[in-house]
Structure formats: structure tokens, C-alpha cells
Length: 190
Image (cartoon, rainbow, N blue to C red):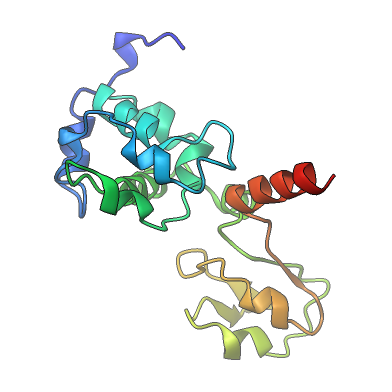
């Protein structure tokens, strides 16, 4: 990958360092401890927390915020305990996701395709209120169309509504991590 200096935001690392959990971001010296313990790195091709942090320090804001890679992290925080510099990789990735959302670089369709937002098929929904009663995050409601609606800002993609919907009207695409695990399982058992 060729890096063009005109596409770099030299203040990006400063901007992110001011966000919750990101204060030690500039202390990363890319030792690879985070990558060595990352379970997602093992199953999602191209995902590497060390690479993401390095891209932040280089100022590759646009490339990161439009990339699917920031959405692959499972937020397990395994990386936090092993970092010798106290950099909280998972918090940095969470901040990157927040920036992508804030800047409008992620729409509902992309969130659905990444496995971060459940989707209701209005043709199948019978407005039984099961999803509304069972959602622990208050993400589901019955819309003016008299069909279930999932509020994107509240959905945590837990899958409860999918499992419990008696009409089978709600779906959730597997996350990048789940897809990687499925491919690994197929390779091992295949």
C-alpha cells in the first residue's frame, strides 16, 4: 500500500487520544503483544490490532473509518492486559467505530451487513411484541407501520430477538468474527 502524505491527518492521533480509553495511544511501539493474543486476528484475514493502531498514528483516518476491519474486533479486551505500554487497543477501536458513526460513514445497511444490527422483515412481522418484551437494550419497538422496528443506536446484535421471534421475521448476519470461525471450522472438519 502506498501512503500519500496528502491523505494523512497528522492530528488524528491527537484527536483520538482525547477520547475515553485512548490517552496512551501514542505510546504504542507496535510490539505485537496485542496481535499475539487477539482471537479475532486468528480467524479474520487482514485483521490486526497492531496495524490499526499504527494506521492511527500515521494519520490514515479516512482509510480506517471506512474500513470493515474496525468492525471485526469482538471487544474481548484480551489485548488490554498484555500491552506493556498500557495502550487499550479495544478502546481505540471502539473510538474509531464511534468516529465512523459520528461522521456518517456507516449507514444502517452496512451495520446490518457487518452483523451489528438485526433486521426486521416487515412482511413476516405479526407485531406480537415478543421482541419488544425480550430486548434487554430497549432497541425494538412497534413502529407506525404496526411492525417491529429496531433502533440502530440501541441494538447490540445480541441475537435474542432473532432466536425468540415466533414469526422468524428478524435476522442477524454473522459478524466478521463469526464468519471467520465458521470458515475455520469448515476447513478443520472439511
